[in-house]
Length: 63
Length: 136
Image (tube, rainbow over all chains, first blue to last red; front, side):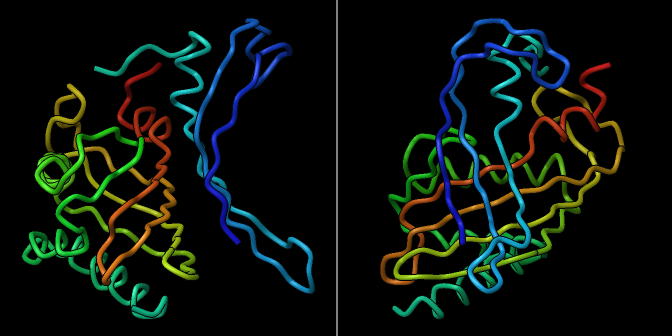
């Protein structure tokens, strides 16, 4: 099963070592879930973390 | 077209993507007014898709996509993949480093008449930039 989503939220707590910034972020991602007998047994995610980090002000524009 | 036929179209397109002498045929995957959402945000239409990929292949001429999972239902095909490439040309302003990179990606494509008319794709660009040494 696959879903492509847009996630929106506010950075209110520490995340990946980054203290809360209070910033509102929005980024896209995809999940690919593997199922067995109606339950998830594995997943693969690809998320637009670069965009998220840029919105948090942690990472500059490349180049 | 059946979803299995759409899946075959994508698999063939990926073979062409991976083969430097067949690369121009990769664009047969897309309908002339295909829309690629986000990553990257491109103007609609085949010309901008061609420009984007030709620039990408100039930077990463030996890129190989390996499919990890592929599924199809109704007019959609989804796949997750891994890419491997060597940085041999300027990419996003970063001159060739010669570094080998590997990154994950996942894509959903919507087909009409066995061509992709709409696509949503994510790749781990953060991982790419880190491997190219863009951040310390």
